[in-house]
Image (cartoon, rainbow, N blue to C red; front, side, top):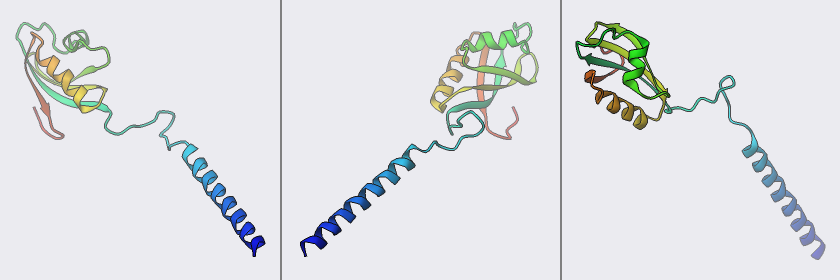
Length: 125
């Protein structure tokens, strides 16, 4: 009877070790990736904005002007449509959405920007 208990104990220990090794191997597997860049949902700022600019802006479409009013090298404004005082632009850069909102808030404080409106998908300025 003692022999059977020893064998059963040995089998249980080996089984537990096997399960532990399988769990450790599964945890060490790399996460699926898209190409060579890991895609993390919700961590990218990408929004369209409607800007109302002051009339003294010489060329609102100038990338130098757009970069200057943004004043953040991690983010980029891209001209989409508009006139000298009304512009639709694309804001891109690292997220999350709270950081993106901070950039929009800073943008609204620029002396050449009278108003900033975040456009919803499909919304026209």
